[in-house]
Figure (cartoon, rainbow, N blue to C red):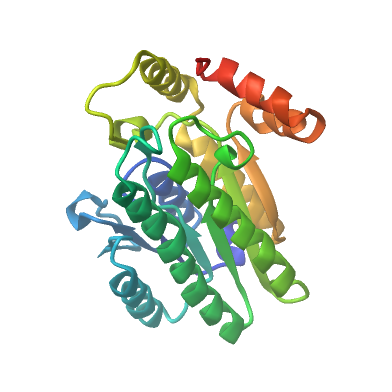
Length: 272
């Protein structure tokens, strides 16, 4: 079987220090690509052959974009760009200062879209490339008490869907990668906004943390991305447990709005 290096040469991966981003970077390195990986703290990035560590904070929109531009110049252009960086914030929407949600939306939607814009411009100029926006199964099955995360990921999926139409007929592809729960440290990095949880919030948080523990390893998501890149076609890719990647989308298509809300409350133990 051919490796990705037969089609792609260079890659840029945000959020490459841990979790899914690290798995994506490791997979691309194993496939023979030259990889530029980012994290807010550069010291958390691995030291490996063909890996170039970059410090990038999504909260700094223009500065983050310039890091991508400089890395792209050093690489001679990126064949693959994976927008994987992000974080969760848990709390009641109205019970939390709006600045918390605004900051998350600016980083995970506005500034991620900014990186996508820059990456796509470079790919169009070279006439090839793969833009991968890592959204979430929360697009189809929103997470209770993580409203801004749901908004950011839904917006990112909508952006990807729009771009798939725009790049049709070219050698540029756009992949909307929607992971469900995987065994990462994501729940440990979630910003918990309430000073003390209500009983309902505590139930939902415990359910959320438990699901992360039983999810597949990040390597599963990396393998799904590898297959998508190997196919070389734009599209939506779901990865995770069957209940999230098959049953939840099926319910979203076939069930009523009331049914979807009922099962979401049951699934996350979010009933009042």
